[in-house]
Length: 524
Ligand code: FAD
Ligand code: SF4
Image (cartoon, rainbow, N blue to C red; front, top):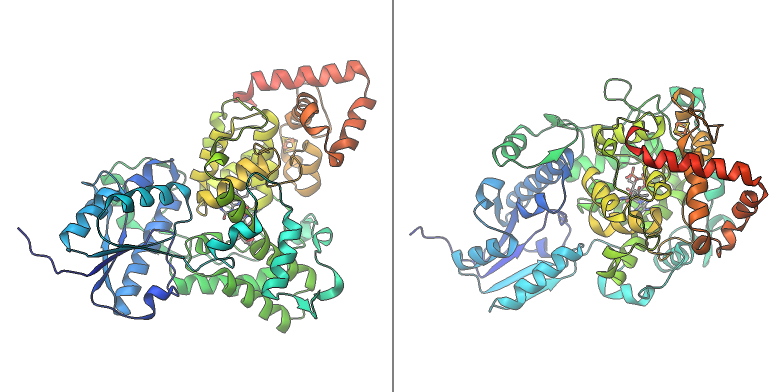
């Protein structure tokens, strides 16, 4: 039998815990073995975009190498090494026995599924266990209950103000810098033709993932999406930092202004490269913890202080996403799990159309948002919320299917952030825990914020008829069928007034057209 070196402690590092600044690593200890493993179980709980798997696997290997170079004892295991283990607990059990470890340590996982699995595992082993804070977020895990009450709606804006005060960001003598908390109203511009020609080219990397591709093939891992040999996503801390500085220099000055804008003139694999507009694309490195939210916010504010081109409205908009939204959805996720997983307030039951996996739909907005997601594993917030999410909401797609699609397709998708955004904010399946209203729209909104409609098969101005934009009638069908639930909300009262003003015959025609669209949803 092979003899293995013995370690006093085994410490697990999950794929989204690549935090080099964690206090675990402040001291070298030869008696501690860190384990980072490509796990088969993580490939099967949902079908993933191949670039998501590549990005996590490449980043995990780079992190293992960096820890080793820094003098730590690290065991990195590939899919080949872990194939014989049924799941994470069976792997850990074997490693504890193999290295005769006396203590097992892990960082608080961000996903409920892993939290539960590790909790059950640690209850079943007979050595001491140390579960420590993952030291990534602004709010420590054990403080979440002070900010969030279970099953209760909380407004993001008041949470965000508390966070600004507590962490003293963009504050002057206890008051918001510029005397206003939120500059969102200044941040809703569409891109003109001239604006499109001056979009910054995104900083893309070219990380060789040939070995990972071979392992995925060898182990028959079921994935989808465009599979490159060279991955454009950052997989090391230094690449993450380069991306952050690139964003602050070239994108931050216009970040808020064009945050909601969409274009189909710059986002094809075969065409121009400006598909991410002025967005940071930092979500993957943030969620994998290769960079901390504090470092991102501090760096962006430092640029704001030094560069005249970055206005207060732009920096405030960016800080709000990270200090506000990101921490907010995490708090709501943890305070509402595991019940959140099953919420379906609007009782949506329709199956997700198969074109969500190919982009083959005549609706140009959906075609582009889905195609871009398949090409890059990325779409920006408004594409996720108001294009794909809006369609699923008004067509009444079952939230389980919507969640599975979002959790699989985006490189940054981890359940703690994906689910509150999808099931909560986008699908209103939580009945209003995350958002104050259902984010639903017809074609008008998309036409206002994008150039998608100009080259669409459908006519955005029409509600009925063969070429009418399907979103128009689906929107009214949605509003009409959920009147009892949504009509109570004062923010939606005006919409119902407009509906009621239309002639009965017109209303019937619109509803009948929507019924037809739902019947032929696969061929829209
Ligand atoms: P930027 O626009 O540059 O924003 C900067 C950062 O702010 C992001 O990197 C992100 O960390 C944070 N942020 C912004 N909005 C949110 C938000 N609503 N919730 C949490 N963080 C936010 N984000 C994920 O990280 N993972 C997901 O799986 C995910 N799923 C989503 C699903 C739906 C239906 C919707 C509507 C949104 C989802 N988001 C998700 C939030 C947001 O769309 C992405 O964080 C953002 O598009 C990532 O691109 P970026 O890094 O260029 O963001
Ligand atoms: Fe989308 Fe309708 Fe515009 Fe076509 S016309 S791009 S379906 S909003």
